[in-house]
Length: 436
Image 1 (cartoon, rainbow, N blue to C red):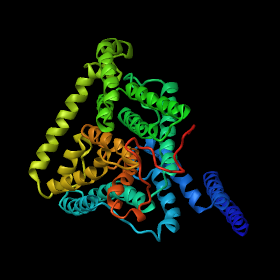
Image 2 (cartoon, one colour):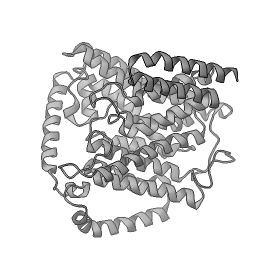
Image 3 (spheres, rainbow, N blue to C red):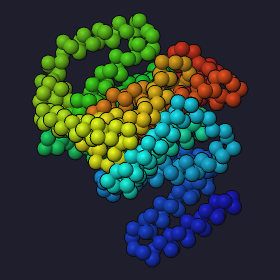
Image 4 (cartoon, helix red, strand yellow):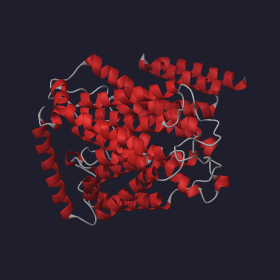
């Protein structure tokens, strides 16, 4: 009760002070007041979880919610920062353990990124890009590793991301296509809309294994189908190809002959129906652009020119790199890293991705979180997304899967109980069997 009274007084004071500066500040103060009251009612830890859920919900269209597409700081960034700050009292006494490969990769990226920035033509710009990159590739996974959220919280965060993309997809359908015949939703570009759809599908592969009830799985399947539809609407060939690879990976990862047979039959049907699907979807859809329509040739030319320039820049400074500036047109994350931080920076980047991708083929209750990492591995070869919050939000959760191998030597300290090969937790109270 004293906390609630204090929060109310503080919120009232904020409103009164802010009213001196016009309408924007009162609205901002009301938002702060509401948040303070929320913390007073539900507690700091639950407030932190709610804040991070909002961060995940806005991540699929984080640039679209910013004051400008070129803004360095977005509402999603502020939500992540606030959420993790609120978690500090919870995690401060916990030990922080990180996989050795991940730690080595981050250190390599930091050192080579600094060297490349110091020899670049724009030192401040390159250092700013390095900070943003390390904040998402380093900050998010490290905070997840330190926090180690319970399975039910992981699902809440992922459902928030799914819900955010569902809203963006609904907006895309209602708003209609652009002059190019492609859909972008609430994202700032068709490819970023497709990226969120691809990652939502990867998330659905994880969520499907967390439910045993028919209704829960039906909801997950529905979300997965909508995510596929959003990718087709976007016209992104890269996201469509990555979706196909993820689908092919499922029977291999799950080691199921029956599932493999089902996928093979579905694949045969897709091959037979592909010409009809291209005709129905239109030349501006991802299927149509895969067939060469919708101006696909111009995109190919732009990518080819960008990669040629990137290769030339890399060969000029293969060891030190030339800084993380003017990389957007290269359209390939791996080449961007090699250009900006040199060959050793690329090694560090690959070590980080290896750490977050490898658990998919191992054991542990969260191994399927690595589907998102594999999606990023493929999509990043065609789209510039080094410090894209829309990607790193779900990918950072794969750190929980990576931690499983670190903690198995001391099971008494592991925050995650063992599971059978299908992914069902043994005796886990948080395992959901009914509806989400």
